[in-house]
Image (cartoon, rainbow, N blue to C red; front, side):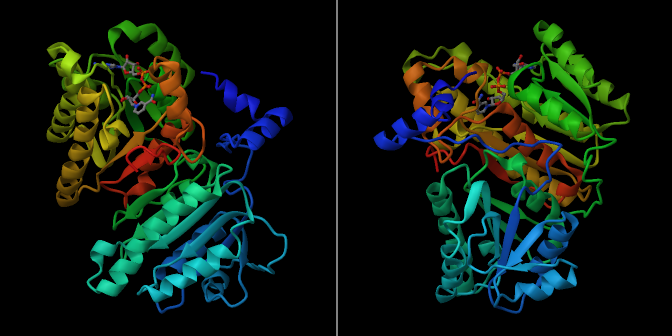
Length: 466
Ligand SMILES: NC(=O)c1ccc[n+]([C@@H]2O[C@H](COP(=O)([O-])OP(=O)(O)OC[C@H]3O[C@@H](n4cnc5c(N)ncnc54)[C@H](O)[C@@H]3O)[C@@H](O)[C@H]2O)c1
């Protein structure tokens, strides 16, 4: 769908008009491009003073593997970790160098006073971040800390990151990654995702990396040899998910309702995937998925994307609209997961990824049915994550919560509400289906064993429910 205002402000006259009137100024976001390096510019790395070096050692190793162009402040202790990892860091001279990524290991910060180091690192370079830049702060999960001073300092990072996300504009994102003690080796997929253009429309998020299987992957094709099923794959976000998973090497079983067979077939044949036409609410949906999966030796991932809206205020909502939305968006996912887990259709280290919505977090006028279903998806992910932790098969479950994404679903929204939804976020624009798909591919990666129970919004840091 076209964003005429967004196109207008890209022109020189549009830029002038928007600036003079104080209107939102969306920039064209960097997005994945196979011809471009994973990190498209210089990375300034820093670390708070203290004894724990485990996180910055992992960061240094990952930057070395990415062949990133790394800079460091002259007095920063992170220098040793970088040189141990073979990274030849340049000195940040405080001149005109611009940075694509600002990355700060704040895990050593253990009281309110020490938060000053976050200020010092970022304040000095706040005006030197490139368009579509990345601000990343890494800390320890506050809930794991028994020392109150340390816990409050680590929790404080969340307010910092979310404010930076709102201030920096120009497509710059900001994230906080909490890495549990001992889970430093599980940081790779998350750091790669957030330093790259794949995370274009994800901002202001807090991600928790815990201990998980540490699987080696070929980063050029991280999903190579995997079989993944995507529901609702004939169009919109589901189609984008299928395409991105296939691009990353997976064989994708594309599922949709029989009425969508022609579109589904087109998507599947373009990505050399297979087709499964079934209504996910039907009695034998689990069995049909199992049969399709067994032909390929089981499933490495299931992406529960299919969903519908039937909007009405509660007073005007008939029973059928309530039942249908709850059944498709929530009830069927719970039933399918149970079937796939009970019948060993999901392989070891399988990845379950659900699609929630910011409506499920913030609630929305006219969407009591939809918001209930999407909040339920978050409940399902939280509860299942605990269960998977105990079953020792290395499986994980996570969810994305998209905000305003340009699809047929959002095209149906009345103009004024649509325009408000599009602009009320730190990117001043709607996201694209591919932005949701890239986030799902990160969760679905075999290298994401340390991600379990995360809900990540793909909403450009929307003001709704934040
Ligand atoms: N578009 C947005 O802005 C947005 C925002 C937040 C969340 N979401 C969620 O993202 C997901 C995809 O949304 P979209 O915008 O691409 O929607 P869409 O309507 O374009 O696509 C949904 C797909 O799901 C399929 N589907 C519906 N019921 C099904 C059933 N019973 N069995 C099998 N397939 C079924 C449809 O045929 C369709 O192909 C949904 O879960 C939606 O709630 C979308």
